[in-house]
Image (tube, rainbow, N blue to C red; front, side):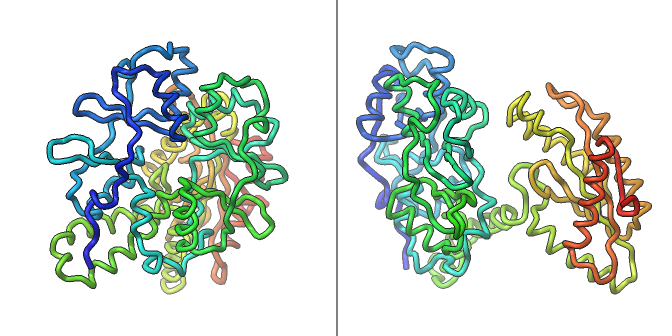
Length: 444
């Protein structure tokens, strides 16, 4: 089996425009061809104009008659058309989901998208034994709103928070969606942005069930040429969103297996496979924002530490902490600075804890710490030290924040949920006691 070269699968029907042309003409060309992005040719450099760029142009009241070369547009990566499709894997984590395919003279031959890659993956080789619900945590660049939400405010938030689509929900069920194509039309035709989002949303929303396999999900997006798909539970309530990019990433491990079956290609790509395997193993076990362990990895490490505790008759404790009034940080300073706070808190945790301790982002603004060999008294002392370090740390723009803590000691016979539940109850006691303090299960 030989994998195709890039030139064989690239789309040659490209929508492009010269950098000396106007912004207005670029938007018109995007609408005419029903494209959410357009390639801007700047001599031998290729850039991309996206819907987020257009939103920024509108918010800054930039004259649409200006030339495209006056904008600071992102450069698109390029690849030779004779390269193997496996060489495109390194681009899957890039912020721009396009690759310009070049002839030998560096002229533009075509455009490679995730759709092109997807169309050349045999569904029978995919992970058809895994369900979407196992991977929904990957989908994050989205926002859920009610149908009465103000359109103008949502567009402003798309700029600051960098999500590129809005799902409209009612009773937790998706009833509409605003995509990048919808946004382009709003700007082009100067619609009244003070109207509620329900005026402009696309409806109905085509969804898939969270219990479908990765194979079925990839077939779904390939057939409909979707960039993302809304996922619902058996009652039709929204469970999350997953992108085509993430689905391709999940198939990578199956590609690695195929490579081992074909020795004539193995020598050429062995180094690439090794690097990519490390990359995706890390992705599967860590939180995308903070780099800390995620829940899945924490559960594995807890079970291992628990067995050691039983065998060696050690103590072991848990600390659960929650950033106080974190919603106010996001509301007052925006989600980007909110993310910065989460990253800074994770750094404080890593600096304060011992090498043997395990720290995880538990969800949202909540973190959990596993302390092997520590009884509840020592765990409480360490929690107080972390609390003090967080309170004293001055974060750029945001200033000072605080956190509340709950501590429990793992007992023989405990399962993880029971130990976490006691720490959670102590955490709620800390919040009820005025926040910015440490409570233990002994205080309950």
